[in-house]
Amino acid sequence: MKTGQVYILECSDGSYYTGVSSDPDLRIQQHKLGVIRGYTHSRRPVKLVYISEEMDIMSAIENEKRIKGWRRAKKKALIDGDFDRLVKLSKSYSNTKHGSAGSA
Image (cartoon, rainbow, N blue to C red; front, side, top):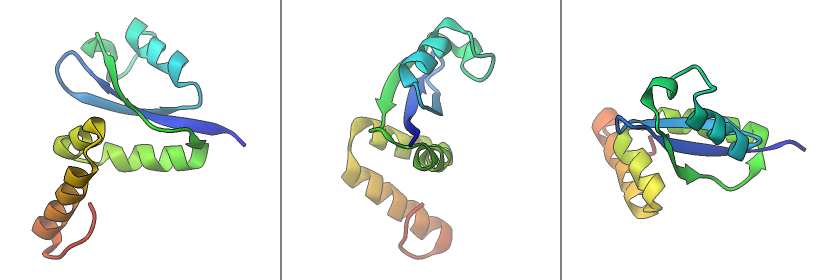
């Protein structure tokens, strides 16, 4: 079974880039060197601020897509490992957007 990990890079402009890779060490090095012509290329240097535990690649891809849709505050809570704040941000956003409790 192929595995992967989700990672978040902080770019020089303060933005976050979320990616997924089955070889995160290599992939992050490619971002740092500018080999990847995309979002991070013009925002170097980048630094790794979060990496998930290893999981099956399909779960990693699903998690990457989910995290990419999050607001900055929610990503920051994940980076900080503040899961209580992460839950509160999810509920407060859901209450604001949908008028009821849930997750965003």
